[in-house]
Length: 217
Image (cartoon, rainbow, N blue to C red):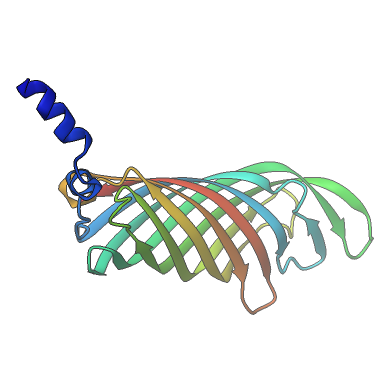
């Protein structure tokens, strides 16, 4: 009889009591420092380098370039829901392939074996939001400036060069499985980064898909 009373009591208990027992944990402030190794796949939709005497078509071959990046992040402010951080990133990627090259003096087009090394360096701010109800899911936005060092090597004279391209970058992101500040794992972040060159005789339009592992220090 006592068991039946207990079952009926739970069945007709107020919904507010049940919700208060199953509330998501309150978000906690992030740790001060994080490091994030990242794998990216870069696709270039526009690239112009000041190569005297030559015109190189980079676009058909410079698609799907795998790169490895490392980001060091310093959390500046957080109220447990919104947070602002400063971060610095350095990356590296390399590709050797035949690129369509035209000599401007003879107007002859022929494939040339080129090795390009893609080295982006940037500083940026990251803005994130952590919902109290979905504490392990964090959308965010990264906005920053930087420079792309692009090394081009070839056995043909006049094609080898090292160029620095100033750039702006914007990256919407979302972080999964973020355990907060009580664990070394800061979750996995998936993002899409847009890069645009600014000024000078060079031009850059590229984007990348990014996947990083966030580690609390």
